Length: 95
Image (tube, rainbow, N blue to C red; front, side, top):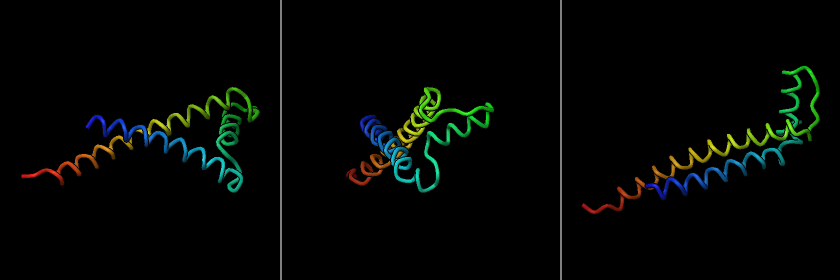
């Protein structure tokens, strides 16, 4: 089960990062903003000043957010992989 969990974590984490970045690249122009614009706008409203989209602060927060998305995707992927592995082991077990 450990092997299935680790493989699921790897696949889930990669899928989380790919989906988050593809949403930014493909849908960023359609909905009006991407990750950087959203972070800069939210922190501008929070702190009362404007932040440049390429500032270190904005980029570091974007990396942290995408890291959280990757971690959550890895956790969900690991859990799903263990569930599938247990199901397949029950189905292939001989009585």
